[in-house]
Length: 425
Image (tube, rainbow, N blue to C red; front, side, top):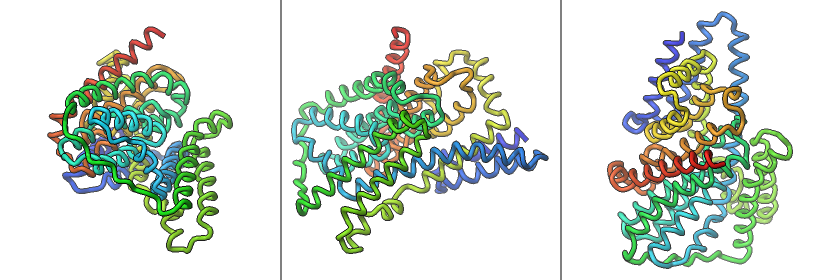
């Protein structure tokens, strides 16, 4: 049974990794893998009640992550529908290239922590297309956006799906993960930014930013209300969890319902056609549902490996073969640039129990940093990288030549800072 489930998982994982050559959506591969793993488990176990109880137990944990993602994605889509991100665009001044590099990096870093790295990358790359006429210079800054978005998402419980998984799973707490991984993540962003700013020093000026004005005062007011309220409810989720001790998806649903009511009120006088594209109903249709189904499939697959004891055996093998938990965590970060970081973190959660590494143990914090930032080393190694690749048609080997080494230097430097910080504190 264990051999069959392991083979199914490996084949499914290969199909996910080779999504583009196979032209099969990774969500389909992940869901089929998850269902087949549990089907084999059920066929080999005579007690169906035992299997179902395990499945429902894990489904409860998975559902918490999925509902959180659905709520967060809807809020972000609603902000975008109201042109809320234009507020950020308007704040960027038309200055020298080196200053633009730092502006892009810092805005991406902090915006990613408040939203998420994927959404932030889409917003910032779209902005670059308005600012930089030269394709190669734009690609260089798009690479910086990927690094900065992943670094910014790693230190926030809502900034990267892997950090969110650790937060929801109880491995890390809000303030601790922010305090312990902020400086390493900042170093991971600053070093590549310094190099890219030096490279672009003295290069041609960018295009002037289009002066996009709101149609009227009412429209601008609606935009500001939705942007600041949406950002506020996202930032309130960790506070809600701290106060109520309820799962994070309850906080995100609270925020979404509040924003839903507010948008219904402010658009109540509009006709149905105008109101439709600004409604939560429209935002729900625009969210990336295949990604949600991918998380469902891969997390159920990992759960099957956990209940059959495969992950425990893998953890024992790694401990005996490698021995050093810091090296293991660094390797997980490196592997996340080749394969998706979501199943790697989910596997680590299953391999290492909280009895061994309790809440806020440095292993979980270091894992959040490594899995979040290691994916920047290749453009296919993170959702942010794939998004930038799709929007700008960035070539894989161009990224390897121009960005990968910078991302690797930043990743290793940030990891070194984290380990040094652990020793000092």
